[in-house]
Amino acid sequence: MAIAAAILLALSFVFGGASREHALRLAVVELAALPLLIMSADRLIRSGLWREHRFALALLGGLAAIPLIQLIPLPPAIWTGLPGRDEMVLALQLAGLQPGWAPLTLTPDLTWQSVLAILPPAALFLAVLSSSQAQTTRMVAFYLAAAVIAVLLGAAQLASGGERLYPWTTTSAGSVTGFFANRNHLATLLLACLPFAAVFGAAVLRRRSEQRLPLWFGALFMGLVVVGLAAIRSRAGVILFGPIALVSLLAAWIAAGRGRPGPGLLALTGGVAAAVAAVAILALPPILARFDVQSAPEGRFEGWPVVASAAETFLPLGSGVGSFDAVFRSVEPLEKLDATFFNHAHNEYLETWLEAGWPGAALILAFLVWYGRRLWAAWKAGPSRERDLQRAASIALLAMLVHSAVDYPLRTATLAVLFALCAAILEKAGKPTDRELA
Figure 1 (cartoon, rainbow, N blue to C red):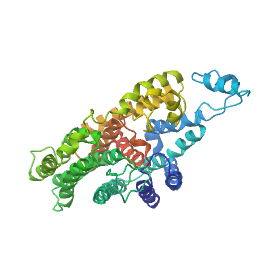
Figure 2: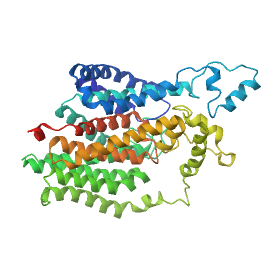
Figure 3: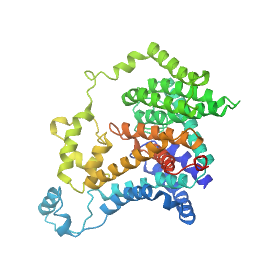
Figure 4: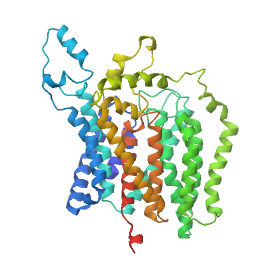
């Protein structure tokens, strides 16, 4: 299982940075998930651990069930009466064809792709539930190291003048993207890794360890995140950095033992402050230019009312997972047509409302209930290795959930797998640790 998990993590990071096209690379990641999925599911069943995580596993089952149910063929008497299918029926009539059996989704091929895209995060989620604390920590350490490598690759992309070292043909030339096709997703990765670096470094202070490398790595990593976000120039990343950094420092203070902040904890804060000051002096004007809506109007906000109106047409069951592009093209106002491509709603909650309707909304609400309960359990507990990791995971999940309101980070395999890792870590907050039982 450890080998299978390592292979999945590596492939998802290198090949999972795009959300569309490049089907062969994404298929490699999905195939790599199958061995881990089978082994981890078998371990959960044989050990009986699945009983302790019934609600979380039900959420995962619901995530897979929605697109699978949408793929079930329906007789014409049923699907032709569903909301939003009038134009499909009219098109068949104009072509002189009789309606046959058809699934609920408007785009069955893309819905199948969505089902397959669930495999990597589902496999890692199940694996972490049955993994030891040491194994989980190594997985988190992988992402910290991978984030550093991604920033270094981004620096090389910047040094090349925005012409080379891009792994995806859909990348915007000149942007700092690392292994991603979208610079916003690199920003999400850095924000999600930030709390883990903070608590890993601060935990050394509580244990009074002579080994200070995690502390200095945490301080340097937090400074690197500031510099990285300045180079990436993701507006959401810049806005979210302040709140995420503050909550991460709070988690670090708890991990350090909740005592009076000493030199070590101040070093973590100082690393962030020094990097912010350097960025403010050297790179503030280009960052502020990204927020100038007069020179670059924000098209995603203008598209949201169109998406919301289309979603109302397909309620209560939605248009089908993966059908956003086809639906939006059919309802996009003519005056809005231009050379740009509105491939997603840039709002996961709104896009889910369109594609999955009431079942999708219910699943999101159920997940938020789960998240709130596990977050409370993690933060009310005292400092320990397990609780420190769970508090960091709750912050990482929050960063990805908030960013999903203005983008689509979880539609990349890289971040979907990271989300699953954090969710599995936080799920264990519902179970007392060995120290608390003692």
